[in-house]
Image (cartoon, rainbow, N blue to C red):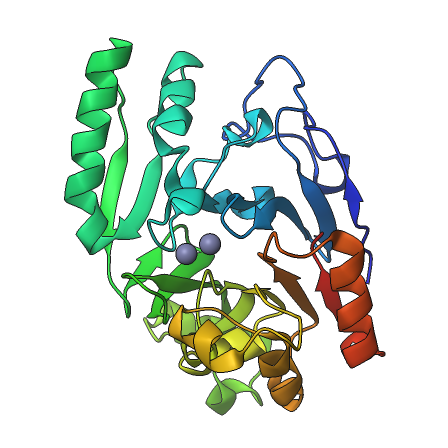
Length: 308
Ligand SMILES: [Zn+2]
Ligand SMILES: [Zn+2]
């Protein structure tokens, strides 16, 4: 496992993953305008920041997609597809600025997937911002419902699932689609397979690998309702509350998770990496570390990371 967790400024390209593609255009100045933490896992980089009631934003440059627009670091604007989990302000406030920046930098209009109920209000906000700013805000807003399957490319599919929060909300799983030879053809020679293929037989079948999952804000029911989240190679979940003095029933009512919920589900997490984030501002960073490490000393055999 090759990973690192550090605070970093925006960068122009990621040498570990080849040169920047046309979707990661030159964005000029390197500005440290927003906090960004970064972690590399296998062939992907997870970048972002999340703190409850402050701001949440994540992206995976290699997949060309991001989650939530609570703010928009200057370095993130090259990512063209964005999924918004719900419309609490700390998850959506930077949407107009993101759209405006891409237009100003002559990038293609972005595609933003939003809970269906949010489309109309967001369109109205964009129209008013456009008037105030005297600039167009071209973007493709896609109404998204739990159960939807979004094909981003030949290799990548995103599925949406319902989560449990105080307003319409969704979590997402990013699947990598690969083609594998069907079992019934396993004994055949290369020539025989070629002949079948030339004869019009589809000798392969699709397999999907859950590479990444993002819970967004949710009580534990939202996580339990989507088993793929427990299987994904990397899972980002929210862990708003960690202190024993914060009561679980109340926390669940407000659509959030508590450290106890994580501990109770320990055996279910098959993920290579579980990233806990979206901590309440009631806690100091060292307090969060202290409480979690005391409760889970092995940090799920080293797979649990606190995004602080
Ligand atoms: Zn939130
Ligand atoms: Zn929220």
